[in-house]
Image (cartoon, rainbow, N blue to C red; front, top):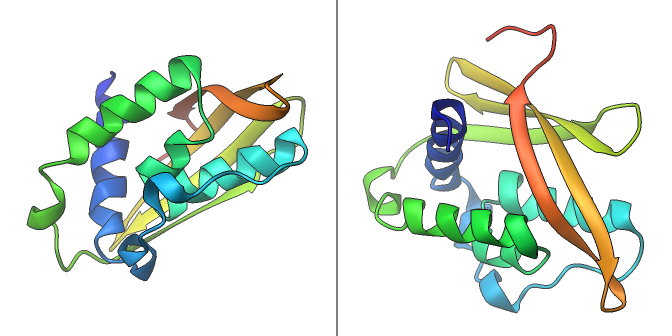
Length: 143
């Protein structure tokens, strides 16, 4: 995992503790909606990056994405209690072009992080799955 990815995971874990969505107990019982790839992609983004409900996000994944979410769950396991009182916000918007590309913005106090997200979705077992996802520095952007 790159340093940039690790810092994003930490920032999102920190953000989680400030938001009411983290108090939700959806976890492993939450499942993505039936329908098109776009609906599953955005459901995954909401759970993974906005609500920071990694256990729920895991239910929309398989393959590399499943392994990565499992790794992230293990990484933040011991951190949650140390970050109480953090204030922040995360949101995303779709980027024009082919594929499932989004711009993620994470605001933590005076710090703003922007990343481009790319999701690879595949159809199988009668539904869409997030097969892989990645974050990268925003093209042409700065932090």
